[in-house]
Image (tube, rainbow, N blue to C red; front, side, top):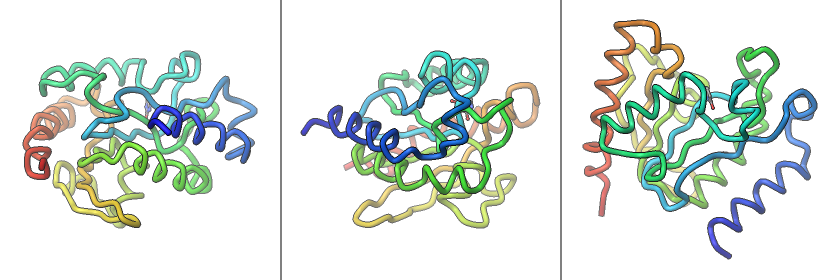
Length: 192
Ligand code: URA
């Protein structure tokens, strides 16, 4: 089976298992992810917003444009990486995802990573970051990579600020950009 087929099978599985039914009924669609299934780097945000729900693609609104700019500044394009969210339906009125919604999607996120087999996972914001790094303190831990292991998989996790939080905050914005520009170096640490 190709990675594409495996991801499609996983998508079907999420629908058949009726994951987070309360979110599902209010959302337009499931937003699985976007990008390269052979990517070395996977970015994981929080949950789709309005634009993402409408287009079925993660990070296409204002935060997504900022993400694209930072990718370009770090010498990458969307096609070089894979982008997804911990929660895959838009929460109503863009509220924060509830703990049980994150918990419901977590096993599927791990399965996505098993399919892609990235070397580096970049979490965007505390919702995904805290799942990989318990007791995450984003103000001191941002940009610091940690090795994590799930089943047979091992990769580096780099917790970053969320682009939406940093978009209009000068100091956070600068910090996020600086952390982002170091991602290619993190990758060289783990490249074979
Ligand atoms: N914010 C997120 O966390 N994810 C998206 O897909 C868009 C905005």
